[in-house]
Length: 364
Image (cartoon, rainbow, N blue to C red; front, side):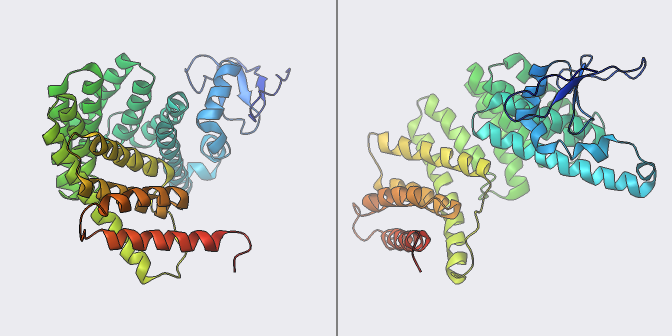
């Protein structure tokens, strides 16, 4: 057996396989016959070094050693306790793959997200079976990755599979709204705005059934449907929906800030992971730019959205961004006599400045 050179980029080594007949392995990415093996975990195989490198960057680096107990049969794994432990490990792996895929999607790394989403789907099928509602989230992740890569035929196929699974699952599920959200995004890309409106309306309906009309989960649908109305040139409708989104997020962040004020000595923990924070930032930033470019600017709306962004980055620990958006919010609020947000914005700016000073080297 001759070892291949170590692939660049910090990946594990791969080696040529000399497998006995009847024990053929398949590539982790394409399911074609494998000739290479990861020498770290020894349970993952590839058809060539290019696929090994792609999988390492996409997800394998994060889950390499976690795959060993799952893919290595033991006496214990044949017993009930062993099977339960293996299933729990797979559930943990699914969440890691989902989180990595979502984070890479938020960063625009669609090719890398594809590999993480594929691993998420394979593990989900392994645990839940080939036609269960638990497969819908990885289908949607894969569809979003392919959409970013411009593979619309793949997107349509994946969303059709997700729809078929949902049709066979009569029970109400929180993934209903996610499916309609993905379908709406597909119709925007293909230019079918009426179909996009229909699916985003269903997104809002199912999300409100699950989380409530004023939930931050539901308002993602309000934001997307507002974007469709903006594309159709119906700007007052879009503006009204954006205002609804701003109110929901402002209420949410204000409550978080009040909770923090009640426990000022508690270490400030980020309220969202990186992928969620980027998604919320992009949403609010789009709304801010829409209002700033509107022919009849509403300073109150600008102040509220910028204040949301300032609070978002305050909780994210990025004080420079918090100060920048806070300053924008303060300037807008000061254009309105006795505006009720001015004191709140000034209080946030003072809090951020004090924390920024404390975090500087040499401060007591």
